[in-house]
Amino acid sequence: MPKMKSHTGMGKRVKVTGRGKLLSQQTGLRHKLEKKPSTRTRRLSGTVEVSKVDRKRVKKLLGR
Image (cartoon, rainbow, N blue to C red; front, top):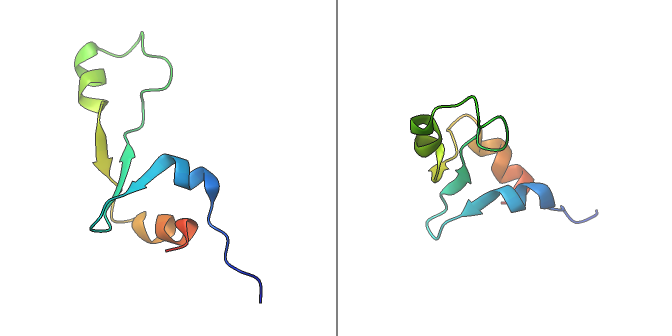
């Protein structure tokens, strides 16, 4: 039986804290920033916890 490989792309996008929480950057800050108000871009900056719906899928991709 081959070993389970972790998804390297997901490892670059998600950080696992010491207690096991999954942190990632919020979406909407990569491009088309001219159309967005500065209040929105400030609100989107920083990291947030991965939503409850996605946790199981992300943990599987990370090999946890």
